Image 1 (spheres, rainbow, N blue to C red):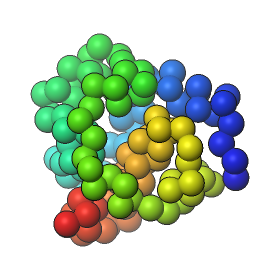
Image 2 (image 1 turned 60 degrees about the vertical axis):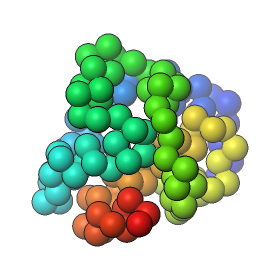
Image 3 (image 1 turned 90 degrees about the horizontal axis):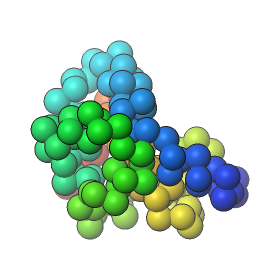
Length: 120
């Protein structure tokens, strides 16, 4: 599946706070915790729980969210398919970062060990 400018723009303009509750529901419905979700997001972005809440209160877009992040250099180790797209083949940097986040949430929900999720 080939990414499009329209798809990339849609991701950039999505409000992180509108998607985050879906992440929580997804992981909690599979027996994982919000704290584990914070840990995974923190590993990827460098945000602690307080900063994450501040960004949600500001209703930042994914574009702003990732602009303010300090990306983990090991994020490039995240591979696989998310929403029909192979993450490592995505060309748009923001779309790729959003794919990394979605993949971490999926791995958490699927019960993958935290050490593996955090690429240790």
